[in-house]
Image (cartoon, rainbow, N blue to C red; front, side, top):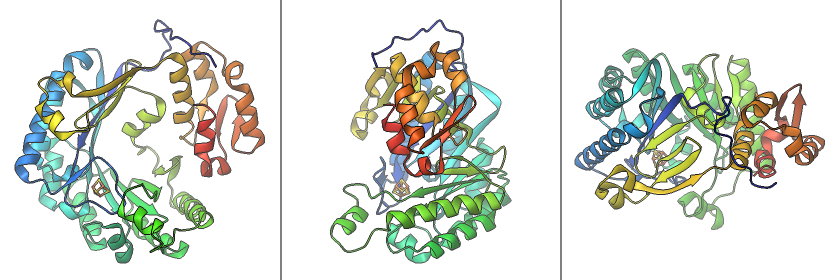
Length: 393
Ligand code: SF4
């Protein structure tokens, strides 16, 4: 397809009235054995505080650019391990967000917490600072699996963190689990699911372990020290999780996410709906006003940047073709799929005039299904989603 220009005057263009803010906290107690996220182990409290103050400067400095005409309806502290920030620092960061941006009264304010780093006091402190949603990185309740993954916490720590969070007043708690870890069985994975469901989090994310190049887990696999879970077992684990979640009253709303009705992650939905969000902090990515851009991933460069703009590493002005492709492959991550009437309204072009050949092929192969104006992944499409997305890139 030729590159299409955007019609920025189209009143139906993508939402530009609300804004999500992502805040990257790139510190961890220790590096997990499977992790290739942008995070550093072993930083002391002074380093973390200096970083938080730099972040505050960035949030404040870019408010003129993003703030005036929009309402911030989600704020997300991600990492790394954001729960290494003290409640005082979280409060200072949120204070500057509230001071420099218009924040919705019902804004969703999430903080990711590692169960090995929180106490009831810190969780109460986060609530006092304005956090209203906690995302607990449990990953597993199996001691052997936790050890293999290099997590710093035990299953008991996760149960404690959960109890502390409820006692502190969190009514919206998410939990992350990983499956497909070498040596794991389907029965073992279902035990993990059941342990998590007993705690009744409002939201549950379940990710298949991806052995990222350069990580110790990857080295174990290429070195033949462990055997990867077979693709068949991995998929059985995935679909058994979806079934368990449905039985427990959760809605599977995105490839790897399920929630009790009304508790879908509003922040993450922005990513899959091509809504505007800005990321602050080391390496943070943004999509705003039709531009994708990201900060430097080099800590020295970030910390010594004289202005927030000089923290940026790259910027790309999305063409209409980029936006259309992203609307499709990000939107297809949601189990509701994409609304083809909305596609026409937003882009002023008929979906089928642009993507008939590839879409018909995917439907024939059983990877996509159409119901009226909706196009979504099938059960097989959920397993082979990357192959589907490639067709639209
Ligand atoms: S806690 Fe999360 S970000 Fe930190 S090393 Fe482990 S997986 Fe990576």
